[in-house]
Image (cartoon, rainbow, N blue to C red):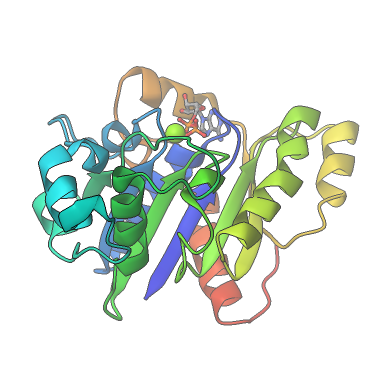
Length: 256
Ligand SMILES: Nc1ncnc2c1ncn2[C@@H]1O[C@H](COP(=O)(O)OP(=O)(O)O)[C@@H](O)[C@H]1O
Ligand SMILES: [Mg+2]
């Protein structure tokens, strides 16, 4: 059982990494669920799903029924065990994909019914041994509150070599701590080797799972709207990242 969340600044390659990892795990016969928690909603197209997936936050009637008790009191632990099966689509390679939808930003840990519902789904996505959960998150969902991603084993912060992207690292680490995730690691994407970028990478004070070179091929795959794993792009680094993250979860070392 592997539960990972992927975060980082917009455009760094979170969705590409989420889709690649989902694909690589699915290929090894894991049952993979990928949840798009980013308001950009593009995980499904990265996994080749054209049909619209209804965002979970839009299930107004279900939310009302499950979360709000008589007298208008919210239930902290609404029943949500059937939701992911009901409101998801499968990609061709067998990844189950759901979309979280827009989270109301009413302050940290806002107790709006929709947020209580979404939190419960993320908390209770209980998984069997052969299951993998991948959350494609934007850089800040701290308003979901502490304990949201409880049970998530690892948060991967994706960065590209650049000061602005690196500045988000400590913020993402804090988010990871705030929502209660145990392990934290970094993936460097769109890497082009220069003196400066080498130095920047050496300055990372967290475990690095892999360094993916910049490759125009991914941009072209995105332009053609095909999943990165269906293009002819070089994907060996993604396979290495998948192996490294398993080692990391098992507290073993790895080489980069
Ligand atoms: N290693 C890479 N080299 C070049 N382009 C990349 C690479 N990884 C991702 N991209 C491209 O960057 C853009 C943003 O990637 P995406 O995964 O959607 O980022 P995010 O989900 O973080 O916003 C896409 O066009 C994608 O194809
Ligand atoms: Mg994205």
